[in-house]
Image 1 (cartoon, one colour):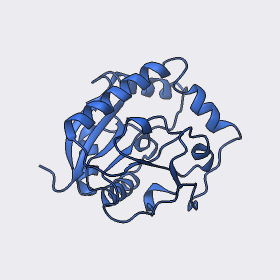
Image 2: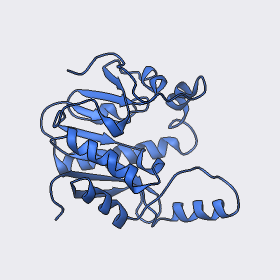
Image 3: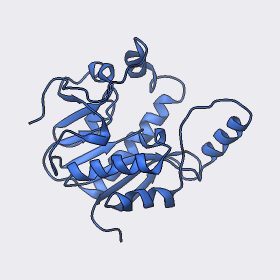
Length: 214
């Protein structure tokens, strides 16, 4: 069973006071945020249509403040390691505070999984693969993840700014080849890529399933 309230946190994660509310209310509501939000939702809906989803609960991990939960079919379990982000979710459904590297769920517990805006914060392949392996373990249907594509104009601009000593965001972009290697190592096979803007935007969504790569 998954608790309806915030569960035990295995990896404490604390930001400054008010961060979660600011993220919820401003991150995708100001500047380029609304356009990015629309494009991400469009890409996610496309993957859901094309890859299908069986009946049952979905896992949104990390969920942040629950921005994309309403796009997922079936009941949604929202998971994040930041207790404040979970508390800021407007949807008061099922929420769990835990680390993605050690999900507190049984094998095949979910009909599908969404993991958006996490992999770019994991520079080491071993970290990414550990998370992907856990997502594959708890899912019996499609696993949809996002990553930053290194073959993009946005990433090239980020590299230039970094070399000039500006905008050191800490985010990591990888090639599609590297992402496929990560999927293969985690026992996942590719279904579809959906870039927000191929060769322009970094953000790319990927649908995959457990099983041998083809």
